[in-house]
Length: 197
Length: 258
Picture 1: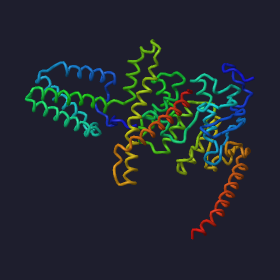
Picture 2: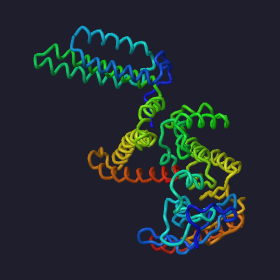
Picture 3: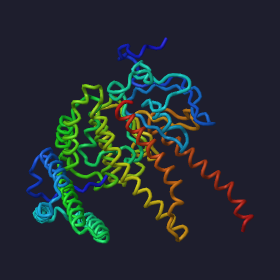
């Protein structure tokens, strides 16, 4: 149930979620349309400035962006090894810029506001008989279960360590599956009772 | 002749009624012909683990369908009522573990889900949820992440979500089980102040002792049914006798081991 949204307000918090999402989509697409190194270097510089302008709001995601930069460095290293320094620079810059844009959106936009944009975009589907609110409920359930999965895994692993002195590893898959199925049944029961079936 | 699902609710009928309900789960018979009229504003449900308290609540909110008999809400079969708003407005349930029912990451979104059966848009639902919190002096809860709430606060959130959904009858399954003493007192006060019918299944007898009616279930049958004070006292006496019997039965074995 965690969120990367930062309560530390920045200038980007004041932008409407829809505008931010549209900008990210547009800039993200442009990053992949151009191959000129100077353009991507300028984008990299702009992203670095964007990151710095967000100040302490980026605190929660520093580890995340660090792993993205490590991944970008590995990709660059692979291309350098193949003797393509131009491709190395372009790929690394694209990955780093796209991730920075995504992170900027995530830390400055509440999940609720993003879901509202999603609802507005999906609203025309209601004419086809689909129910947009059910789609966003499914999205919320997916996010919730992803986190629940890791929390349960960690709990089982801790119990296994305590009782055997060794990490559980793949032995935990069966009990984890059983627990996840039971949790899914309980959540389904709660939704049934709350939404009237 | 049972009334049809689309027949108007009968105001003279008890809010909830079980007629000759048979429920079998796996190889065991949970209820064999259980009949109950549940008309009082506050009803406590007590008994040992496995006595059928949770099964009864699950029947009353249509999560469980009986193999025989009927579960009626104002004369209408709850299991034949169309799913959605109509059923959600009759009966709502708060589960024992808040984490099994909280879906959304923030308080206002979680409360907003309760308004979904009424067909409100997300924006309207969030606005109503915020207003609902503000009325209770909890305006600052709206944006709070559910993960940052304590166990007692998560339970309170589930209670608020149930109130906001506004069903006629609220079913609470072991609501006191994971609350500290101040939390128990607050929930008991909230229940007292709530203007709806409330059924509480509990092992904590204090809050239901003053209820006009407490039902003591034992192995799927009603063993006591009456004013809270009398039924709770009878249950406590029976438990004391059981414990004394078990201890005296265990003593010869202990002597033999020694």
